[in-house]
Image 1 (tube, helix red, strand yellow):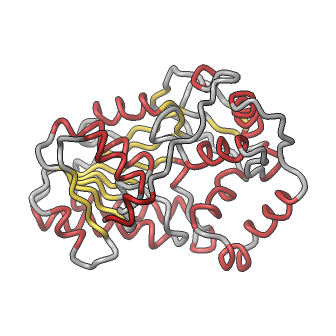
Image 2 (cartoon, helix red, strand yellow):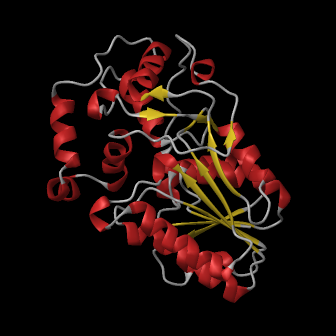
Image 3 (cartoon, helix red, strand yellow):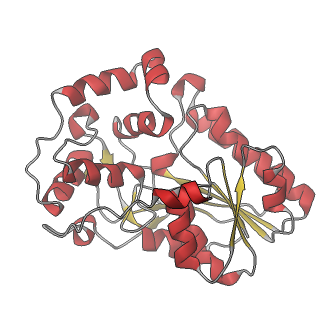
Length: 300
């Protein structure tokens, strides 16, 4: 099995959940040598995980050669729509050529933000999917709402937790009015494992919450009395949402937070989970961030 975009939070969780079904597991990503990937390798031991840096032209071919199943997870390092969609189309083309039997696309909402300056995001995404389906008529697709609750938690939630723990306001555009239907990671993984060829599933959680309500739950979870939004955060929002200045000053995964949190994300689900957000993040239940082991990155 090969997971393209496997160094992303949800990509790592997918690798761990599916790895037991395969004898050979590969991770393909533009930036696979992250401390979080080394922690993943420790959790997967003794099973081996081969990392492929997709910045090298031949790495995608190496990751796919001999694989029975390829999973493409939208990941977080590209601002441009054509760059994000590139790996959907390129993986489908190469997987077909190399005899891969099955292809699955996973679109986690938190990482699936396309730069609107490139064109209408839904049109661009559908065009890439259609090209992949021409090569793999049995293509299966899983789309999620905001993921919470485990190692695959979306960046928006994990960074909000960290900022609140440090007594800072999270990213808070549009006064936190944007609405979501957050879904637990366990339900994302169980849905993925049950996915059949040709399935196209949109997965949401059981409740609709605004970003302000999500941050209020997280604030109580870390036991901090932080004002949400306002002040310097208002200035950051204006800069990040401006086309030229935002592209110039902000890294991709940060700028995508502002695209994500400025509007409602309530697609019509075809499947609904049962786990509620506040049950996973109870008041005064935060135990701190996971230790970062930068020496593992240097050693590699």
